[in-house]
Structures are given as C-alpha cells and as structure tokens.
Amino acid sequence: MGQWLSWVKSNEKEILTILDNLAIKAKETAEQLVNLLANMDKSSHYQEEIKKLEREADELTRSIFAELNKTFITPLDREDIQRIASKTDDVIDYIEGIAGRIKSYHVTSTPPYMLDIAKELLNAIKEVELLISRLKTVKVDKSLIDHCRKISDIEHNIDDLYRTAVGELFEKNDAITIIKLKDIYEAIESASDRCLDVADVIEDIVLKYT
Image 1: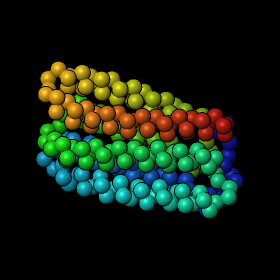
Image 2: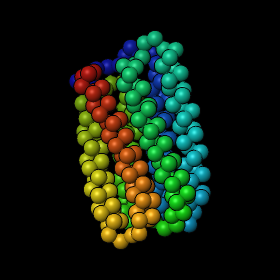
Image 3: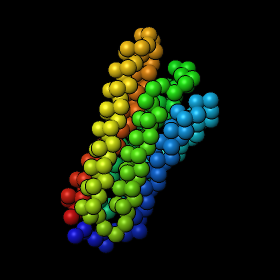
Image 4: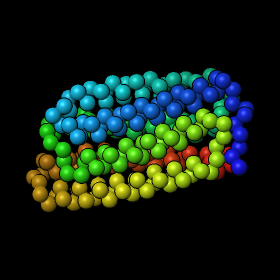
C-alpha cells in the first residue's frame, strides 16, 4: 500500500503544484520541437515558441527553489525535489539548445531519424509529467515504478536511434555536416538522459515512502 501524504499542508502542496507546472512546460517544449522538425519551413516560429517556454520554465524553477527556501517541512525530501526540478529544467534547456543549433547551423531539412528521436523524447517527457503529477496526489505507490521503467525503455529506444543516425551520418556526409548534426543528435540524447534521471529520483521516492 502507498503511504498517504496526509501531512502535506497547503504551502507544501504549492511546491509540488509548481513542479508539475514545470513538467507541463517540458512537455509543451518537446511538442514544439516535434512540430519544428515536422515543419522545417516554419522553424522560426517554433524556435520562438520554444524560447518563450524556456524562459517561463526558468521562472517556475526559480519559484520552486524560493518555496523550498522558505518552507521548513517539505512534502518530500528537499534534495529530491531539487533534483527533480533541476533535471526537468535541464530537459527544457537542452530542447531550447537544440532549436538554437538548428537555427545557427542553418539546418533547413529534417535530418534522418531526428523526428523519430524527438517523438520518443516527447513520449519520455509525457511519462515524466505523469509521474510528477502523481506526486501531488494523496499517495505515492509502487505503480509509479512501472512508468519509471517505461522511461528507461524509451531511453534505450532513443539510444538505438541515436547510434543508427550517427552511424549513417559518418557514411554519407562531409566533416562540417557531421560535426553540426552530431552535436544536435547528442543534445537530444542528453535530454532523454535527464528524463531518466528524473525517473530514477522518483523511483527512489517510491521505495522510500511505500
């Protein structure tokens, strides 16, 4: 049985609500990345949307740390909340960096496998958002571990796509193109690693509170 979080007071719930809002921003940012790669002719529009979401996410992250600094008793371990917030914000920062690289490297068509990888990243972030939203409900239970494992499976899928994409990249392109596109592929793969980091923290929380 899950442990009931009945001791969570209203100001403490606020921290988890802001954290959930940050996860929603991550999901929205990933959706815009998928839109960008699916509609490269409108890339400027989606790059601006991603930049806007990244700024909003930074505000939410600062709010979480501000709330933690003035709250004596937190609903979960302070360090766990900090790690979840930081890693979720990292995902958004990576996506903003990906959009920026596409612009600065003058990438005008979707590189092979990149849209597929972005869609898998979105799936991982949807699982992250689901997990974080459950943290602010009445109990933490072991069913969350299934979602943590699902993120791990998605991350493995991304790794496979990444290796395939980079392998083909080296076969068919000049050195400059390889450097540019490999940098973008690596950034997407790193964003998926941060999703797995969040899943690992939440799995630890589940094991501690159940």
